Image (cartoon, rainbow, N blue to C red):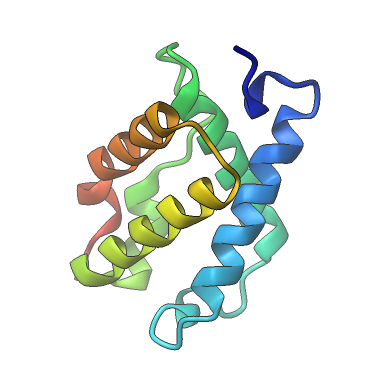
Length: 119
């Protein structure tokens, strides 16, 4: 069965999900401050690459950024991290991503919690 991500425009699909995710996050009064003064387009592209790698079974992390370093100054709380994971789940479901792929992505995100949460 062909999925959204098997199509030629798969990366554009990842970008669309990322745009939806960040639009939802920026609608939350207590989350949007994390993105003040940041190029949202650059973050969307980075997130799209992350989503792509999350569904790839390879262990190639050579293009990943140091998440602890990138997020340290933000003092992200555990509650805010959890809410962002919920919003990402919604964005994936909005795009009709297969349940098994949603689980794979969210599991990958959860495994990075210690590198992102610093408050």
